[in-house]
Every structure is written in C-alpha cells, then in structure tokens.
Image 1 (cartoon, one colour):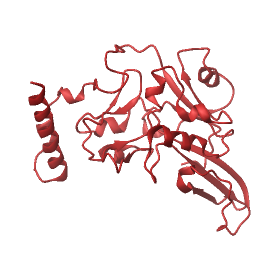
Image 2 (image 1 turned 180 degrees about the vertical axis):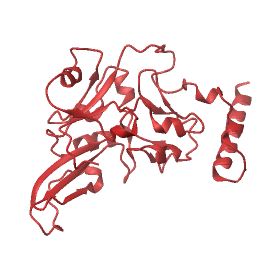
Image 3 (image 1 turned 30 degrees about the vertical axis):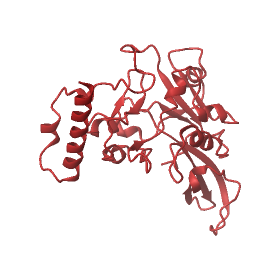
Image 4 (image 1 turned 90 degrees about the horizontal axis):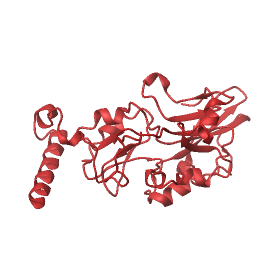
Length: 266
C-alpha cells in the first residue's frame, strides 16, 4: 500500500509540474480541489510529527536592533554553516547603507555580508557622513503571501507561527519566491526547491536560540516568546524606543521587528 501511495504522489507532482510549465492546459483549481490533503500540515517536518500544537501557547518574535549591528557578518557565517547554504545564496544577509553629504543613499551587500564590512567603498566621489547596517531574514508573517500562492501546499504556516517549506511536496515552481514581498526566498541550486530562513526551527523546538542570535557579538538580534512577559523580546516591545516592521502596508503582519529602523531602509 505504501509503495502504491508513493507512486501516486510522484505521478501527481509530475503532473502539476507540467501544468505550471504550460505543457498541460487547465486550471490548478481542477487539479487541487478545495479541502485537498495537500493543504494539511505535513507531518514529516522535523518537530511537528507526534506533536499537538492546535492551540499554541507560544508567540515567537524576532527583533533586530539596527543601532547595535556592526556588520561583522557573524550571523551570516553561522547560518551558512548551520544549513550548508550554497555559495552565492543567503537565508539571511546584512545590507550596508551609506549616506553622503548630499543625502544620497547607497546600498550594497557584497557576498551577503559574510565577509563583514572592514573595507570602505572606493567608488564613491563624495564624503560619506553616515553608515549603518540592516540584517535581513524571513519575516515569519501572520498572513504570508508565500503560503497563499503555493499551488501544492508545500509552503505552510505551522500552529506555532513558523512559515516553513515541506521539501517532500515542493515542486520548485518558484511562485512563493515571486510572491514574497521581502525577497527572502530563493531556489536552492542543489535541491531545486524553494529555500529560506526558518528562524532555526529545529533549534527553537529544542529550546535553543537561532544560530544567528547565538553568535551575534553585540546582541543586535533578539528572539523569544512574546507570551512570556519576562522574555527579553517581550520587555523590549513593552519598553522605550520605536519598533516597526518592514513594508507594513503590505498587510502581511510580520513577526520580525526592527528597532531603530531608518527611513532609508527598503
């Protein structure tokens, strides 16, 4: 029975791939009816099998304090090592923002910030009067666009608020990559499937911090449970200072907050 089911699943994935490539005409609505099993939470994702989190008692949030980020790239290195990210691709990266004396803004991120920013840019004619760094990663939206556009239910939001990818279902159509307003997804050249930051879901479910948070030397990255009033992230959000999210008008309701966010950040 298991072998028959596996064969049917493989045939179904191949069929959907052909539909998306245009080799078979028709609507996906005819292929995947409402309430189809593909929309259920995949049990094979690490940490979900055998767990009952229908009503989650945790509300995780990630905070990036731009005023503390020094652009060292330690977070990017930790992420690359944790997930063996292919060269030239980044689950998290650090952008450098430079503003010259005429308020012209320049943004770059050579090698995703993996090498840090020890060398100043030499291609700018005007003196730079301000420099700051902005880490980017998955926003773990409450209403994620990537989930809405995935035709096979490979991208989903778990009951504990993590937007994840089931690589046993992903067909590499890249719809989610196009749908993400934060450009944090990419097509992995090794697996040929969608990939992105997961906030180190495998670590968090074991009670550990995400790898990037663990190595940040200045404490610019914070992670924790907002329902725990004694957690650091909860105290920060209740404390002084302005915290905001990226592209608020998109209506995705990110769980990634930025402290000290500048108006120049895109």
